[in-house]
Length: 196
Image (tube, rainbow, N blue to C red):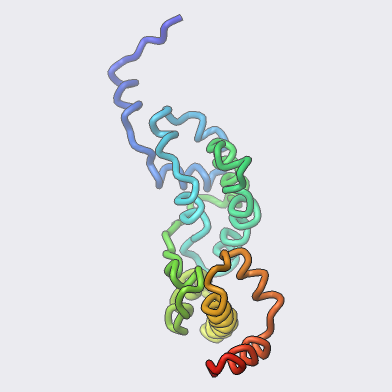
């Protein structure tokens, strides 16, 4: 049986994917939202973008923290798995699961640290890290942000040094090498090479 298309149906088919409508659907845990989208709208669904928006809620305290942790646990951890990444409806469902269903939230985009910093090509500054953590952990005490930033900065600088010493290593291998190497071993290696 041939489906007839009205002018209204044709207009709906041409609508763009509405990010804010989709975020509202996630806030209310609308598991059927994706399946109700037109084929064109489904093609415009970008899971990574939705993940970034979903995880950041402009609120202090527990709701904001819940969104970050829940999105990491139920969506980010598996969203780009080789068996999941080709199934956008499943990705939508994973994002729905991460929602606490506590009504409409004000979601915001929080830019990441630059790729040069996150891939250990250049050391981060304390200001860059504190600004970033201040946006991610809204409502946290300044002293906590400073402490988180210092811990991150120490690790990031160590990984930058390892990356410089082993420029052929892949990102994943560098992470493993970081776990196996101490700051003292790196300093000793650099002394032996005359780089101290």
